[in-house]
Image 1: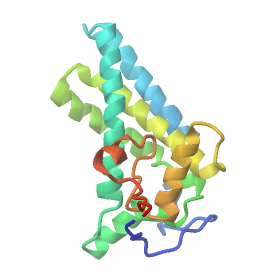
Image 2: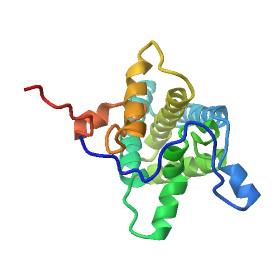
Image 3: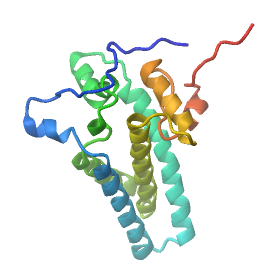
Length: 211
């Protein structure tokens, strides 16, 4: 197994101040229910718009919605692996990486930092809507709805994995995988809402073969 790249020991409790500006610092904290509710409302609005303002059939809207949901799991994996765990080549990149994700690895039990600030989430969602619309036109509404639903589910599962002890249901495997990523080896198990892409790209725990 590859060794962890973390340069700090994770703390189970507490938080850390990131900005001297009190407004910026406050924006880095949010209750998990706020972004989840906003994302699901945004997704619902996109579905309503797609069904009432476009000529796309309901069956196709549903299919595109689930494609968007699946695409989110790939985006989640890619972002987590290559952006959140990038190897900083400068002090600026190191600070950005720490602010975006390093602080979460250092304080994994900080419940108020398990999601991006709601304002940032809504801004990125709107930028994505414009980007997807340029690529796929009217299909972008149901595609982004699925994508945002995937993000909301990710936030929900990520919160459960950090805020509660190992569950006695199907979430237990995800809890184990994510705990390995945090406390044993941060170079594996990048998928949080799904281990699918970890299996596809081989970023799973390598167990030694018994002799």
